Image 1 (cartoon, helix red, strand yellow):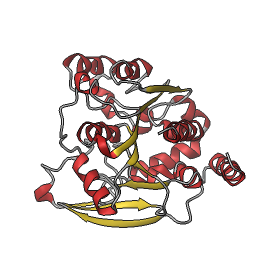
Image 2 (cartoon, helix red, strand yellow; image 1 turned 135 degrees about the vertical axis):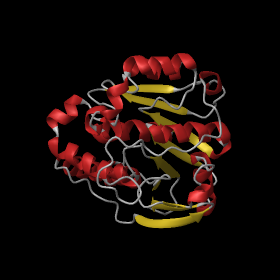
Image 3 (cartoon, helix red, strand yellow; image 1 turned 60 degrees about the vertical axis):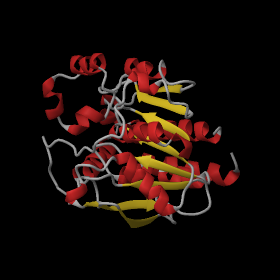
Image 4 (cartoon, one colour; image 1 turned 180 degrees about the vertical axis):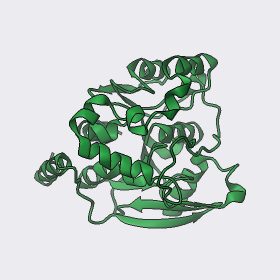
Length: 292
């Protein structure tokens, strides 16, 4: 690690501890007019290898504020966007029912003239990431699949989900569902910031969407464990040891099917490891993508 990056990481760690992560000075917020949608995205630009981030259903492109400085300081081009139904992205309602998340991502990459890139998806964002890897693997240098049930449709897996998440689970407060108890106990300011971003994540800036199902898009592929066995893209699987959606036992089901996948369980993290343990998350992802 060079001296510039060491100093930047130290500054980031101090700022994160104070609850105010630094922003990349070169980050720009733009719109891309794509088929059926005006997509809002954040882009650091530059000549670095692109890393694209896909947010969860409790967020928008803004939730990656702990990742922006770390990845740009490491020399990568940071890109994150608001998926349909989230943030500032505006959808043409006539096309909303047929557009897939993978097609939106491909259209954005074509708009930015990016041929190959690393992809990082968390929770529902990883559904899109897996679908993309199944459809357009030749464009991916690697993929990080974090804290997710992946959209897998096998009956036995769906039944497993019903066993660990009872019907009332979806009505619980989002911070209870998606932030681990250690984080909520030790970092009230970080919890408040996560909730603020979650409350304003839906398109139109809705202040309160409690009980409202998160927007979903159709998939290009029916994702099954059999289809995961066809993935050849270098893959890193991450989850938290307190993740109520995708605990380590669920991650191991994915690791058993995806060839040559690397796995990591992040201690004292729930369903939002990127937010709860950003230093560990960033280090793991950076170490992984550097190899690919």
